[in-house]
Image 1 (tube, rainbow, N blue to C red):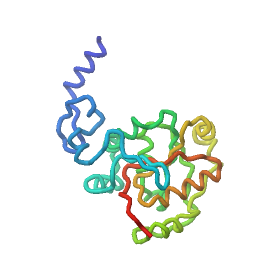
Image 2 (image 1 turned 90 degrees about the vertical axis):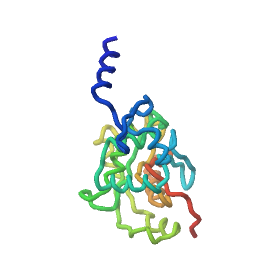
Image 3 (image 1 turned 45 degrees about the vertical axis):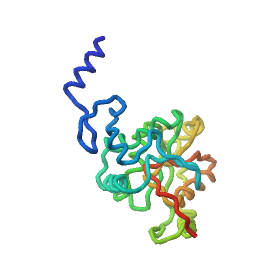
Length: 221
């Protein structure tokens, strides 16, 4: 009774608002940061988008329009509240015993894309950063899918010596029902496949990739 009263008083004193449009959130399902109107505008499905090529993937939405602009802004100025709201559907649909492995970018750590690791936190599952870039790759905007696959091939290695030092990583892997890669955007899937190949060479089976956004598939030579 007392706890219920405290929650009511808290709701009256601190009115939650949608981080995107700043309007008050009135319904219980919206209490995770994003109102239903904005979810519709950003084309965010209740349980996200799913696909199977080039491997199983689960995304919050398509990489286009307003969602694209939000993600590019988050790369420069990360906002945990925004990430929490964007990945609501991903978080609720994810297996409770999932283990997450963020995909590192190619830039030096001080300038690296922070979103894969922050996304792992927003998904509220254990994660282990065991991937490392082992060679430089060229920018991929001008490459077709075949060229992207060649560009990324062999670009990752697994830091196996770090597994015991980061929260009993080996135990986490053996106990996980599913192991997922995590990235902010998936386009051709070349980066994801290179990361998966490196992990599977080390005996870690990857269930798929979770991302904030997926580019719409196009036919590329």
